[in-house]
Length: 491
Image 1 (cartoon, rainbow, N blue to C red):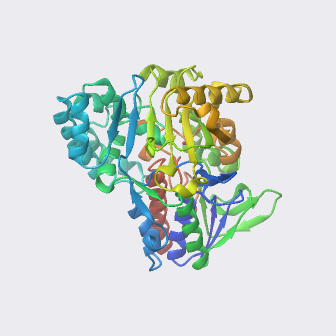
Image 2 (image 1 turned 120 degrees about the vertical axis):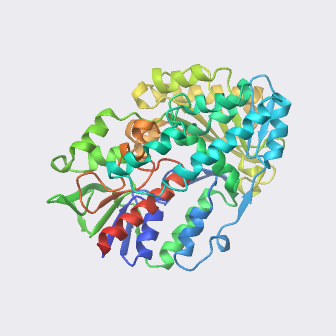
Image 3 (image 1 turned 90 degrees about the vertical axis):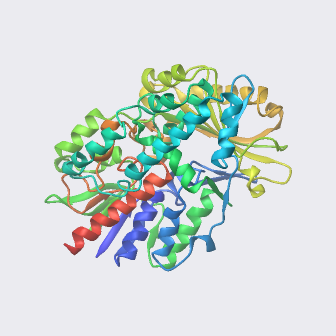
């Protein structure tokens, strides 16, 4: 059978490999000039930057893709464990290093609030119970049948999934600095800790189970290795090829129509496009199901991202690989971003310094950075042509005054992406950084299905479908499609 995969992000790449391993003839169509999607890379004046994801938390998901073809991931990519995993930098100048052994983390917690050491242990135990269900049992299971969701309700209620991540963390930790540090995980997949279901607290155990790694050469090195794997095993890759719509006849996907009108027919069609964009723009109106229309009409989207990439003409050896730099406000700032959708004067930041681990990201004597700033998505009506340069300057000035002294004099080769770029480059609805938000009412069966609602032979992978955003999420979405295609082609 023939298969077309639309989009060369990590979800699309993983789906292409899994379908090829089943024996299908696979063609991957990518509208950009390189693969990776949000995991693409940038190069500027000798500085290299991963565009988006940098944290590898479940390496077995990459290993599986190579094992499908009798190969080893570690023969193509070198993963380096990081310590600390993250450094949390607070407005008062103090910091908290998270990572290493459980005892290391407990010692750091004791420095801030000794009575929270025991609470952290209980948080970990609860996180493992959520992990055992939410990740081990359900992350690669199809949820296109409502009965599948109903069967899980007792387990989910027992695990207190009705709590938000903030409520979950506050149940075990009392000190605000620790509450901030241990509740930010939903932001890594586009969610507000004060709204996101505590199912996502399983991330704590995911980090403990496998640690946090960085790929030498960056996430881009993983993408390059996966591209080479696809080419070695006969997957046809076409760059600069834009899919305009899915070709649907009598309720069945028959392939795609390219920009310009050319038809490409296939037995199986997989979309790695933004799920909301697919259902709203790429599926012909007569073929759209009532379910997909309802999900689109009520969809709540993740926040937007302002991402500043730059080099420095000096090095900052005391800066960790991953730093979460907190502003003075937490809940109030998140409310501005997610609910009021206004661009505040203050911010919190994720600072990535890959040269802490891999010096090849910058010329000798220099450092490479990217700084990610959560901002409102385009529903906030921010004029980024005006506000982008202002926010860039505020971020540089704030980092200069804190963790990167002298930055205003040493910064070089800088550029940035705004939610407008996410809309243009990734066809992300409202420029959302992570597609639809990870709310309970947009999870599992309530999320866009991996088998398209109402259309046969059309499948979805990526951040907007089950199980969600982040590298483990999109890789697991391909595992779901793998199971669905096998079941339906064999059946």
